[in-house]
Image 1 (spheres, rainbow, N blue to C red):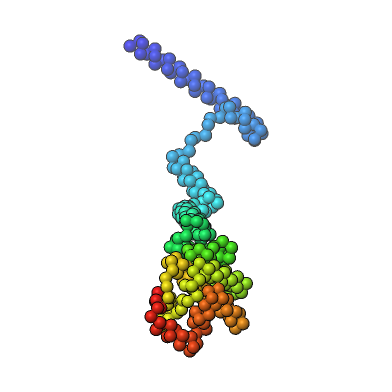
Image 2: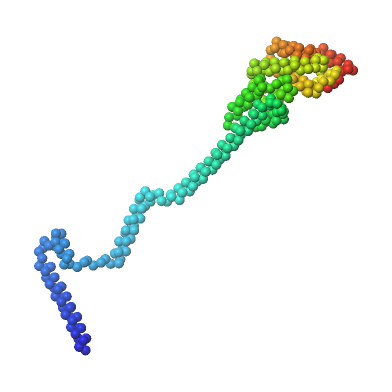
Length: 321
């Protein structure tokens, strides 16, 4: 039992010491002057006073709730808070803009590539026409296809009138300067252009200088053709149905060349408005072939010419072609 009592007596002694110390400090605090209670003595008193009691749990929750409400209000009234509800909508709009730009760029690039191919095709088809007079390249079917292609291609461009004028100018240059009207195949080019390129016809109608020069080229080609077989071309006539009657035969290429030159000469003759120039053209044709009857039948039909046709058609030596 002694150890237990000793431990108990020590504990009581400690308690008494704490009590006495507390009483002493309390007395000293009471003896301090009133001025010590102001702000200047607050630091000295803090060493002898105990800490204020901690706030209650309920007060902590209220303070935290108020802090949250203040923070929420701050966020709602800030610039970021005002725009936050629109962020999803803005994201969708941005995505649509980006997608639309991508589609626009894709269409633009495709259109640009397509127009580039169209320009290349136009150049290639013009080249077929420009290169037509070269030896070994007299392909009428190629020129026909090129002219048809060009009619469609220029309609796909943003400036069809400019491309049409460019093609017409190339045709005019080729007809006036490049093709050889003494070549049966080359001479066909001018007729093909008249048949398949309307703007070329309009150019002939509006420009008498071009029309007159091309008619002259046809005339010189007829003169040279006549020199190849004078007897044949001097006696050839035209029947009532429009076919030609001859007394003898010639080489097929010469006859086909004759058909081409007559067709081209007649097409340009129809564009002449002046009677004086028309009469001169008839005289030039008659002189070129040394065949006045045929010239009258082709360009100035009359009852006498019809009588001549009937008379010539009854000749047993006449051979229809």
